Length: 229
Image (cartoon, rainbow, N blue to C red; front, side, top):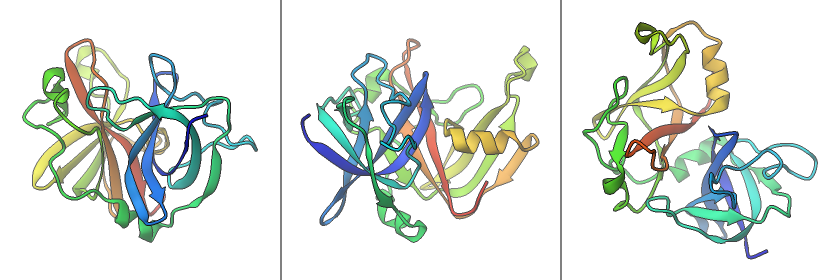
């Protein structure tokens, strides 16, 4: 084992057959930089077994966790990646209270580069060439005018699957990003199709790995809200 890192968990989103976990480092002087624990596999997702506590419980958003690490493994714009030591359990050290979340919000900055959008999204993707020049891939924001939309986006193309999307403004720029937070997805897919206005909510936004289509996609990795969805 190299060194252990203690983080506040701010992302626990679905990725392949596992999860993408990320958070900010807990230091004696406060909170530090983003850290994304990744597995040693090429696909990098964290399996259920790898992220389990010794008592069998699994991490939740806002848990304070000590994670055994092997070392930093930055990948293009995902400078925050650290490969875990899968031989050791993760250890829960506590939970961050709701009032303290605002301390972790990143200083106002654009969500990387804008002006590229998917068919249903808005400002939700970045060319791989442009992403390779970026220095980060995670951000915690306090969004403006947040609406969560549930819809069967591909219905007109014969795809009835329902999707959850966050529509919001950040620094006055509008965004429409897919939500990959499994807890939020489960709660919102239980509701009828439509728009759901959200208050007292922070968003952890991630710029994903390069796709074979030449794009990196912006995702809402976590919906962190004060009240149950």
